[in-house]
Structure formats: structure tokens, C-alpha cells
Image (cartoon, rainbow, N blue to C red; front, side, top):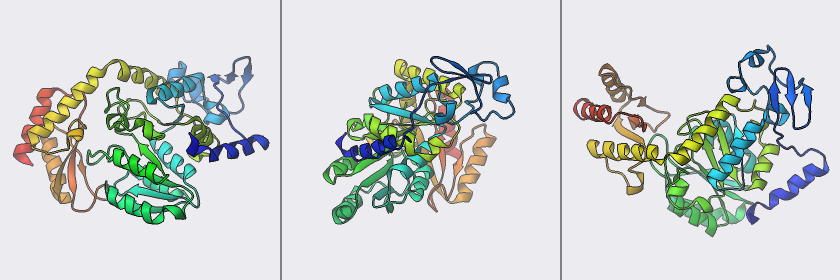
Length: 375
């Protein structure tokens, strides 16, 4: 995409200095490293005690090294390619965690001379990525697109690039970000909209591609971050976007370069579960029905597009009240966590209901009964 062409000269410079990195699929078998055309004694990994090598089968072992050393296998590459197809982007890269994907991507792409506009309720991983970047940061009120526009209108010309940063689904509120309006502003003011789909991937959208798909802005959000540890049911994180951006992250993103690569067991689980997300939409449909049902039972009002989000907060206000309610529910056989500051703003302690497609509807109704009578 043209707006990322400025990265090309930097990658070309790395080529000239013989410092450009590329991920090469390799396979570890004991103390040997297998490439396409040879088998090598492996003195590059970090399996210091040989415990990973003793595991039976690659599916239960660790990757043994960072992705750029020798921890990136053919299975990792297949998962990255599968994610790129799933997200309908040019490329993707896999991180050892969703937190690492968020914090590293923002810290890498947002530079000195840039501006980040970040929603005040963004996840901690996004917040920490902002703090690690050298960009100037402005926190805008939750989902307040008027505030974003006023800032862009008055300040856009002072910065090289502007990054509008938001969760797609806010994990403690079940809110959706106003992605269509933010996409409009990003286009109008020559800015980048960067979205974390941690709680949207697999859950929202016709094909489970997240809130960007559900809100019809997937083609307008060029860089998307996701996790493999929630709906995908594995572990790890990923970034999907233009190949130029992904290549730049491979060469510059510290949380990717200096972390041991995702374990093969997690890679294999993610690969299998992504296929299920694509081939078994009934799971997603059951989840949506449960979410709508719970909101109706509890008399909670949500925007039409948010009714099927499986994160349902019951706001109680005081911390003690939330803790007491969680304890009562536990005594009745239900675990619903009490969420308190600093995770949520002071005075908004809550119970956070998180639904699964495998929940028994009868159990869901019993929980609603308890919430209506004892909270």
C-alpha cells in the first residue's frame, strides 16, 4: 500500500548493509537442525538442559530458539500463511503472545515525530506499546470520535505520521470501537488506523474475522493485531497486514526478534482451530444466541451490533459489592470474576460474564436467575 512505501527504503538500506533478516522454516530434531537440503548439528538453540528434545514428538516440545535464529519451522510458516489468508491480507507473522504482538508492533511502527491517538480504555498491551514508542501520545475519551477529529484537525500537520489506536472489542465492557467513523477520520487526515482484534477474531463477522469484518471496514484497516489464545483456543499472537509492514516488523520488532518462538504445540493447535473457525460457523452462531439471550434476561441494553458480543459486564460500582457478589455466586457454584480498579475505572467495579459456545443453556439460565435475585 502506498502509505507504507517509506518503509521500503529502510529495508533496502538493511539489504545494503547485509543486515536484513528473513524467517526461514527449519525443523528441530533432537540436537539436529533440518533445512530443505541438509541436516546440521544445532548449536544455535537455547534448549540448555535438553528437556525440549526429550519430549515425545514435536507437538509437545518447545521451539528452542527465537524465530530468526532457528525457532521458525515450516509449521510456523504455514500458520502465518493461513492467518494471512484468513485475514485477507498480504502477509502475517506469529508472535509468542498477543501481548508481545501489541506492545512490539506499536513500539516499532510509531516513531519519533509521530503521534499516537489512543482510546482511554485500550488494553494494557496497547498502552505499554505507546509508552515504549518514541511518538507523542494523546489519550482520547472512550469511543469519542469528535475528540479524535478535533485533535487531527488542529495537530495533524505537526507530525510525520498519526496512528489511531484502538481495541476492536473492549475486553471489560463488551463495547465495539466505532471503527467506521475512525476509518473515515484516518482517511480524511492521512493517518493509520491500527486495530487490536484480540476479542473479535473468531467471534465476530460472517467468517469470524473480527469486528473489522462485522463493521465492514476490514479493507480499510491495513494493519490488524490478533491473538491465538482466546477464540482460537491456542496461545500466541499475530499481526496481519501489507508484506512491507510484516517484513519491517521481522527486522525491527524487539518482542519478535528477542523472544523464543511460539511452541510447536501451540502452532499446531492454532492451525487446526482456525480451520474449525472457518468450517464450523455453528459454534459462532450458538455463542451469539447465548449472548443475546443473557442480555435480554438481565435487561441489559446494548447497541444492535454489540448484542452478540460474549463479554457481558454487570456494573455494581463499589469494589466490595463486586467481590461480595462474586463470592455469593461461587457459593452457588458459578465463577464470575469481580473486576476492579485499576483494570476498570474507579467506581465501576463489575462482574464480567464471559460466554462460551459450549455453555449449557440451562446453566446460563440458572446463572441469570442468580444474578437477578442475589446481586
